[in-house]
Image 1: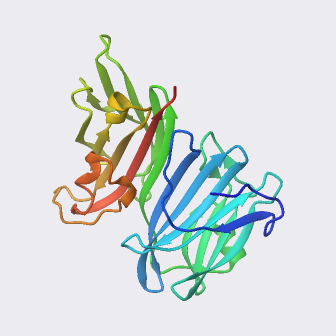
Image 2 (image 1 turned 90 degrees about the vertical axis):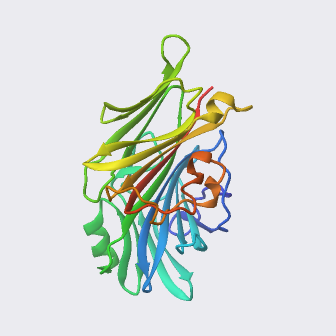
Image 3 (image 1 turned 180 degrees about the horizontal axis):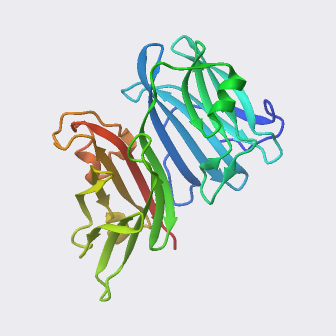
Length: 301
Protein backbone atom coordinates (compact mmCIF):
# COMPACT_ATOMS: atom_id res chain seq x y z
CA UNK A 1 0.00 0.00 0.00
CA UNK A 2 1.96 2.96 -1.31
CA UNK A 3 -0.20 6.02 -0.64
CA UNK A 4 -1.20 7.64 2.64
CA UNK A 5 -4.93 7.77 3.38
CA UNK A 6 -6.75 10.91 2.31
CA UNK A 7 -10.12 12.35 3.32
CA UNK A 8 -10.66 13.64 -0.23
CA UNK A 9 -11.12 10.21 -1.90
CA UNK A 10 -14.30 8.62 -3.19
CA UNK A 11 -16.98 8.68 -0.44
CA UNK A 12 -14.30 9.89 1.97
CA UNK A 13 -12.17 6.84 1.19
CA UNK A 14 -9.10 6.61 -0.98
CA UNK A 15 -9.17 3.73 -3.45
CA UNK A 16 -5.95 2.72 -5.18
CA UNK A 17 -5.75 0.07 -7.89
CA UNK A 18 -2.41 -1.65 -7.46
CA UNK A 19 -0.35 -4.24 -9.23
CA UNK A 20 -0.46 -7.82 -8.02
CA UNK A 21 3.21 -8.27 -7.30
CA UNK A 22 3.91 -9.82 -3.90
CA UNK A 23 5.28 -7.49 -1.25
CA UNK A 24 8.03 -8.70 1.02
CA UNK A 25 7.04 -8.53 4.69
CA UNK A 26 9.80 -7.37 7.02
CA UNK A 27 10.13 -6.89 10.74
CA UNK A 28 9.08 -3.26 10.39
CA UNK A 29 5.90 -4.11 8.46
CA UNK A 30 2.44 -3.32 9.75
CA UNK A 31 0.21 -6.00 11.18
CA UNK A 32 -1.38 -8.00 8.39
CA UNK A 33 -4.13 -10.62 8.16
CA UNK A 34 -5.20 -12.21 4.85
CA UNK A 35 -8.27 -14.46 4.52
CA UNK A 36 -8.79 -16.39 1.26
CA UNK A 37 -12.08 -17.80 0.00
CA UNK A 38 -12.83 -20.10 -2.93
CA UNK A 39 -15.80 -18.73 -4.87
CA UNK A 40 -17.65 -19.10 -8.17
CA UNK A 41 -17.19 -16.15 -10.52
CA UNK A 42 -18.95 -16.29 -13.90
CA UNK A 43 -19.19 -20.07 -13.61
CA UNK A 44 -15.48 -20.51 -12.81
CA UNK A 45 -13.78 -21.16 -9.48
CA UNK A 46 -11.53 -18.38 -8.21
CA UNK A 47 -9.73 -17.32 -5.03
CA UNK A 48 -10.73 -14.05 -3.40
CA UNK A 49 -8.40 -12.71 -0.69
CA UNK A 50 -9.48 -10.12 1.87
CA UNK A 51 -6.49 -8.44 3.56
CA UNK A 52 -6.58 -6.27 6.67
CA UNK A 53 -3.58 -4.17 7.70
CA UNK A 54 -2.90 -1.56 10.34
CA UNK A 55 -0.49 1.37 10.46
CA UNK A 56 -0.20 4.70 12.24
CA UNK A 57 -2.83 6.22 9.93
CA UNK A 58 -5.47 3.60 10.67
CA UNK A 59 -6.85 0.35 9.29
CA UNK A 60 -6.67 -0.58 5.61
CA UNK A 61 -8.52 -3.11 3.46
CA UNK A 62 -7.23 -4.95 0.37
CA UNK A 63 -9.16 -7.21 -2.02
CA UNK A 64 -7.46 -9.48 -4.56
CA UNK A 65 -9.07 -11.88 -7.04
CA UNK A 66 -6.97 -14.75 -8.44
CA UNK A 67 -7.64 -17.80 -10.56
CA UNK A 68 -6.84 -21.22 -9.12
CA UNK A 69 -3.29 -21.02 -10.50
CA UNK A 70 -2.78 -17.87 -8.36
CA UNK A 71 -2.69 -15.63 -11.44
CA UNK A 72 -3.90 -12.23 -10.27
CA UNK A 73 -6.99 -10.99 -12.09
CA UNK A 74 -7.59 -7.83 -10.10
CA UNK A 75 -6.52 -6.05 -6.90
CA UNK A 76 -7.88 -3.01 -5.07
CA UNK A 77 -6.69 -1.29 -1.87
CA UNK A 78 -9.14 0.71 0.23
CA UNK A 79 -7.47 3.15 2.61
CA UNK A 80 -9.93 4.87 4.96
CA UNK A 81 -9.11 8.19 6.56
CA UNK A 82 -9.52 8.79 10.27
CA UNK A 83 -12.16 11.40 9.32
CA UNK A 84 -14.16 9.45 6.74
CA UNK A 85 -17.35 7.43 7.00
CA UNK A 86 -15.32 4.42 5.84
CA UNK A 87 -17.81 2.96 3.41
CA UNK A 88 -18.04 2.90 -0.35
CA UNK A 89 -18.37 1.13 -3.69
CA UNK A 90 -16.01 0.27 -6.53
CA UNK A 91 -16.70 -1.26 -9.95
CA UNK A 92 -14.01 -3.66 -11.17
CA UNK A 93 -13.33 -5.28 -14.52
CA UNK A 94 -12.34 -8.94 -14.12
CA UNK A 95 -11.85 -10.98 -17.28
CA UNK A 96 -14.20 -8.66 -19.23
CA UNK A 97 -16.84 -9.06 -16.54
CA UNK A 98 -18.07 -6.25 -14.30
CA UNK A 99 -17.62 -6.96 -10.57
CA UNK A 100 -18.97 -4.66 -7.86
CA UNK A 101 -17.11 -4.31 -4.55
CA UNK A 102 -18.97 -2.89 -1.54
CA UNK A 103 -17.62 -2.19 1.93
CA UNK A 104 -18.92 -0.57 5.12
CA UNK A 105 -16.55 -0.11 8.06
CA UNK A 106 -18.35 2.92 9.52
CA UNK A 107 -19.48 0.94 12.60
CA UNK A 108 -16.58 -1.50 12.71
CA UNK A 109 -15.04 -2.36 16.07
CA UNK A 110 -11.40 -3.40 16.21
CA UNK A 111 -9.27 -5.14 18.81
CA UNK A 112 -5.49 -5.02 19.02
CA UNK A 113 -5.12 -6.58 15.56
CA UNK A 114 -5.91 -5.22 12.10
CA UNK A 115 -8.98 -7.40 11.47
CA UNK A 116 -12.38 -5.95 12.52
CA UNK A 117 -14.26 -7.89 15.21
CA UNK A 118 -17.81 -6.79 14.39
CA UNK A 119 -19.96 -4.08 12.84
CA UNK A 120 -18.81 -4.37 9.22
CA UNK A 121 -19.25 -6.06 5.86
CA UNK A 122 -17.33 -6.51 2.62
CA UNK A 123 -19.33 -7.80 -0.35
CA UNK A 124 -18.51 -8.79 -3.93
CA UNK A 125 -21.37 -8.87 -6.46
CA UNK A 126 -21.38 -10.31 -9.98
CA UNK A 127 -24.50 -10.14 -12.19
CA UNK A 128 -26.74 -9.44 -9.22
CA UNK A 129 -25.39 -12.35 -7.13
CA UNK A 130 -23.47 -11.91 -3.88
CA UNK A 131 -20.40 -13.98 -4.70
CA UNK A 132 -18.72 -13.30 -1.36
CA UNK A 133 -19.99 -11.59 1.79
CA UNK A 134 -17.66 -11.18 4.78
CA UNK A 135 -18.61 -9.69 8.14
CA UNK A 136 -21.40 -9.86 10.69
CA UNK A 137 -23.74 -7.36 8.98
CA UNK A 138 -25.00 -9.83 6.39
CA UNK A 139 -28.69 -8.90 6.50
CA UNK A 140 -27.90 -5.19 6.32
CA UNK A 141 -25.54 -5.75 3.40
CA UNK A 142 -28.01 -7.79 1.34
CA UNK A 143 -30.73 -5.22 1.96
CA UNK A 144 -28.58 -2.19 1.11
CA UNK A 145 -26.88 -3.73 -1.91
CA UNK A 146 -29.98 -5.45 -3.27
CA UNK A 147 -28.14 -8.59 -4.39
CA UNK A 148 -29.27 -12.19 -3.94
CA UNK A 149 -27.03 -14.82 -2.33
CA UNK A 150 -25.05 -16.90 -4.81
CA UNK A 151 -26.15 -20.48 -5.46
CA UNK A 152 -22.55 -21.52 -4.77
CA UNK A 153 -21.45 -21.01 -1.19
CA UNK A 154 -17.99 -19.52 -0.72
CA UNK A 155 -15.44 -21.73 1.07
CA UNK A 156 -13.02 -20.29 3.63
CA UNK A 157 -9.79 -22.01 2.57
CA UNK A 158 -6.97 -20.17 4.32
CA UNK A 159 -5.90 -17.46 6.73
CA UNK A 160 -2.44 -15.91 6.95
CA UNK A 161 -1.46 -13.70 9.84
CA UNK A 162 1.66 -11.88 11.01
CA UNK A 163 2.15 -11.94 14.80
CA UNK A 164 4.59 -10.06 17.03
CA UNK A 165 5.75 -11.04 20.51
CA UNK A 166 8.64 -12.13 22.71
CA UNK A 167 7.63 -15.60 23.88
CA UNK A 168 3.88 -15.93 23.26
CA UNK A 169 1.91 -15.61 20.00
CA UNK A 170 -1.89 -15.83 19.87
CA UNK A 171 -4.44 -16.15 17.07
CA UNK A 172 -7.94 -17.49 16.38
CA UNK A 173 -9.15 -20.04 13.83
CA UNK A 174 -12.35 -21.77 12.75
CA UNK A 175 -11.24 -25.11 11.34
CA UNK A 176 -14.65 -26.28 10.08
CA UNK A 177 -17.64 -24.53 8.50
CA UNK A 178 -20.01 -23.31 11.23
CA UNK A 179 -17.65 -24.83 13.81
CA UNK A 180 -16.43 -23.12 16.98
CA UNK A 181 -13.76 -20.42 16.87
CA UNK A 182 -10.66 -21.67 18.69
CA UNK A 183 -7.99 -19.69 20.51
CA UNK A 184 -4.52 -20.77 19.39
CA UNK A 185 -1.44 -19.91 21.46
CA UNK A 186 2.17 -20.69 20.52
CA UNK A 187 4.76 -20.39 23.28
CA UNK A 188 8.53 -20.68 22.98
CA UNK A 189 10.57 -20.57 26.18
CA UNK A 190 13.55 -22.14 27.91
CA UNK A 191 12.77 -25.38 29.70
CA UNK A 192 14.63 -24.54 32.88
CA UNK A 193 18.15 -25.31 31.58
CA UNK A 194 18.39 -23.20 28.41
CA UNK A 195 16.77 -26.04 26.46
CA UNK A 196 14.21 -24.27 24.31
CA UNK A 197 10.74 -25.81 24.25
CA UNK A 198 7.85 -25.14 21.86
CA UNK A 199 4.26 -25.52 23.12
CA UNK A 200 1.05 -25.16 21.11
CA UNK A 201 -2.25 -24.72 22.95
CA UNK A 202 -5.79 -24.81 21.57
CA UNK A 203 -8.35 -23.22 23.91
CA UNK A 204 -5.74 -23.25 26.72
CA UNK A 205 -5.21 -27.03 26.34
CA UNK A 206 -1.66 -28.14 25.38
CA UNK A 207 -1.91 -30.15 22.15
CA UNK A 208 1.76 -30.27 21.10
CA UNK A 209 5.11 -29.95 22.88
CA UNK A 210 8.50 -30.00 21.18
CA UNK A 211 11.56 -30.32 23.42
CA UNK A 212 15.18 -29.82 22.30
CA UNK A 213 14.02 -27.24 19.79
CA UNK A 214 17.56 -26.48 18.59
CA UNK A 215 17.64 -30.02 17.19
CA UNK A 216 14.02 -30.07 16.10
CA UNK A 217 13.66 -26.59 14.63
CA UNK A 218 11.61 -27.98 11.70
CA UNK A 219 8.97 -30.66 11.78
CA UNK A 220 5.34 -31.63 11.75
CA UNK A 221 2.84 -33.33 14.03
CA UNK A 222 -0.87 -34.27 13.93
CA UNK A 223 -3.46 -33.19 16.50
CA UNK A 224 -7.25 -33.55 16.68
CA UNK A 225 -9.52 -30.48 16.63
CA UNK A 226 -13.31 -30.82 16.44
CA UNK A 227 -12.78 -34.52 15.79
CA UNK A 228 -10.70 -33.89 12.65
CA UNK A 229 -6.94 -34.38 12.16
CA UNK A 230 -4.99 -31.14 11.89
CA UNK A 231 -1.39 -31.28 10.68
CA UNK A 232 0.93 -28.75 12.32
CA UNK A 233 4.11 -27.72 10.48
CA UNK A 234 6.72 -25.51 12.12
CA UNK A 235 9.98 -23.87 11.05
CA UNK A 236 11.78 -21.79 13.71
CA UNK A 237 15.23 -21.84 12.07
CA UNK A 238 15.32 -18.03 11.74
CA UNK A 239 14.62 -17.62 15.44
CA UNK A 240 17.57 -19.77 16.42
CA UNK A 241 20.18 -19.45 13.69
CA UNK A 242 19.27 -16.45 11.52
CA UNK A 243 21.92 -13.77 11.03
CA UNK A 244 19.19 -11.13 11.50
CA UNK A 245 16.07 -11.20 13.63
CA UNK A 246 13.66 -13.09 11.38
CA UNK A 247 10.33 -14.79 11.72
CA UNK A 248 9.26 -18.35 12.32
CA UNK A 249 6.37 -19.95 10.48
CA UNK A 250 3.61 -22.25 11.70
CA UNK A 251 0.97 -23.88 9.54
CA UNK A 252 -2.20 -25.67 10.68
CA UNK A 253 -3.74 -27.74 7.88
CA UNK A 254 -7.08 -29.49 8.39
CA UNK A 255 -7.48 -32.88 6.73
CA UNK A 256 -11.16 -33.61 6.14
CA UNK A 257 -10.31 -37.21 5.40
CA UNK A 258 -8.79 -39.55 7.97
CA UNK A 259 -6.46 -40.87 5.29
CA UNK A 260 -3.60 -38.41 4.75
CA UNK A 261 -2.84 -39.31 1.14
CA UNK A 262 -1.13 -36.81 -1.15
CA UNK A 263 -3.94 -36.53 -3.69
CA UNK A 264 -5.55 -33.10 -3.21
CA UNK A 265 -4.85 -29.41 -3.94
CA UNK A 266 -3.15 -26.77 -1.80
CA UNK A 267 -3.37 -23.00 -1.69
CA UNK A 268 0.22 -21.97 -0.99
CA UNK A 269 1.72 -19.18 -3.08
CA UNK A 270 5.19 -18.59 -4.44
CA UNK A 271 6.17 -16.33 -1.51
CA UNK A 272 6.32 -19.45 0.70
CA UNK A 273 8.96 -21.21 -1.41
CA UNK A 274 11.64 -20.19 1.12
CA UNK A 275 10.19 -22.36 3.90
CA UNK A 276 11.51 -25.95 3.89
CA UNK A 277 8.65 -27.17 6.07
CA UNK A 278 6.18 -26.04 3.37
CA UNK A 279 8.17 -27.24 0.36
CA UNK A 280 6.45 -30.62 0.49
CA UNK A 281 3.08 -28.87 0.33
CA UNK A 282 3.90 -26.80 -2.74
CA UNK A 283 2.83 -28.83 -5.74
CA UNK A 284 1.88 -31.83 -3.61
CA UNK A 285 -1.57 -33.20 -2.95
CA UNK A 286 -3.44 -34.06 0.21
CA UNK A 287 -6.71 -35.97 0.27
CA UNK A 288 -9.63 -33.93 1.60
CA UNK A 289 -7.78 -30.71 2.42
CA UNK A 290 -9.81 -28.25 4.44
CA UNK A 291 -8.91 -24.99 6.14
CA UNK A 292 -5.27 -23.82 6.36
CA UNK A 293 -3.94 -21.34 8.94
CA UNK A 294 -0.44 -19.92 8.40
CA UNK A 295 1.15 -17.82 11.15
CA UNK A 296 4.31 -15.76 10.67
CA UNK A 297 5.72 -15.14 14.16
CA UNK A 298 8.13 -12.22 14.58
CA UNK A 299 10.19 -11.88 17.77
CA UNK A 300 10.21 -8.41 19.30
CA UNK A 301 13.62 -7.19 20.42
